[in-house]
Image (cartoon, rainbow, N blue to C red; front, side, top):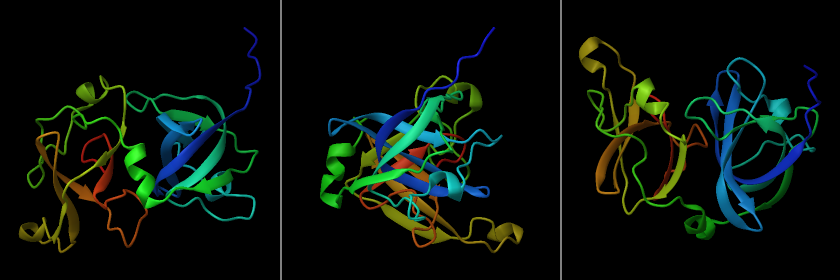
Length: 209
């Protein structure tokens, strides 16, 4: 059967994640249509692990997308992968275009409706509702959420101290939709994802970020 060439589409998003993934990054954001948030998009590459390289995500001036940038992203086709329904194959032949920037005051407008982040009930030793098995995860229709929190507690401790592992980790503790979550997070001084200033972006899959 003849395969028709892919036709490029351009989707506008507010960048809410730009985190390290292997040798590249994982970038995602809320879709905007006529200025209104309508969903999510996560541009992915055609490589095995779908990480986005520096070349693939850069602006024409060579700079990297920043959190809260409004970006026009050239895409080729949807590439959903189990619960990661937001995935779209990026077009590596074109630059991303920065169209603007939203302020912290605009974040309320971008939040998702209040609901559980995922299927709750599974926890690691130090966490709470921070784990989900693959079967349940694949029944979800989303992997990204942007929520507003009334309060957030960050703790730094050494969970593996009893086993001789001196590595410190950062954990976020918060209540959302009347449920407690304790999730491992990347220190804000090292990464630009997740947003954790009375808001949080969480990705489903094992111990989530």
